[in-house]
Every structure is written in C-alpha cells, then in structure tokens.
Image (cartoon, rainbow, N blue to C red; front, side, top):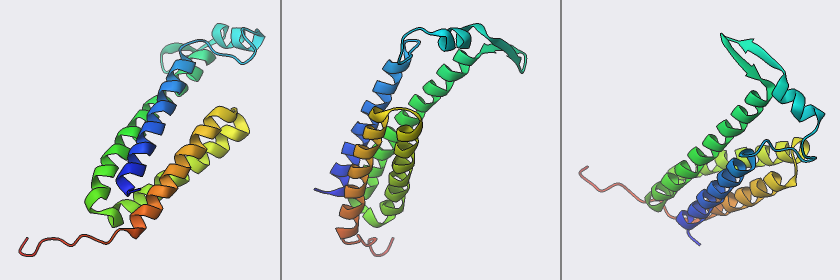
Length: 147
C-alpha cells in the first residue's frame, strides 16, 4: 500500500482512539465503580489561581485535553497523507516522530493505565511504521524547472 493510505489509516485509528477516550471520560469512570477514592476526588476542593477545583476536575480536564490532542493528531496525520502523496521524503521524519510518540504513549498506557489504550497505540504505531517504510520506497518528486 502507499504511504498516503497508511497515513489515512493512522488518522482513522487516532480518531477512533479519541472517540473512545472521550466516551470513556463522559462518566465519572472508575474500574471498580464508585469508591472512596473517587468520592474523595469529587469532595476535596482547593483554590488554584482564584478558582476552586477538585482532583476530579483535574483528572477529567487532563483526560479531555488528551482527547483534543488525539483529535489534533488525527487531523495532522490526514494532512500529512496529502503531503506524502508528492513529497514522501519530507513526510518521513514527521511519520517517524508520530511513531515514536505512539510507542511512548503505548508504554505509558501499559505501565500506568490499562491494556486497551496500549493496544490502540500499538496498532497506530504499526500503521505508522508501514507508512514510514512505504515513504522510503517512493522516488523523490523533483520540482518543476523554472519555478
């Protein structure tokens, strides 16, 4: 398959990751249902820069920020697929950066979160590696003369 196709597959995987992350955060989620830790996260408030926030506010805020980052990643991968169509050699370092980030995210998820996000990161990384390899096989497109 071509680099463009692998990058679009990567964009869709990232989008699905974002949707899943967002839906999972819609609830006050806990793997063991409502418990004393989650109740404390809701109950304990403190002032930060003039506003009152709970630990749950921070937890949810960081989660939603990650969803926004995953959506941005989806958009950038889609845009990168368009660039790779004509300039695969320019796209390769960016593809590599996304792949390294996917590996790191997967390791963090495996160690600190749970297997599903680690699996998404692994699948995303595999698609990005395929895009990277495909981009290396493509001959460079030269600029038109007289430009």
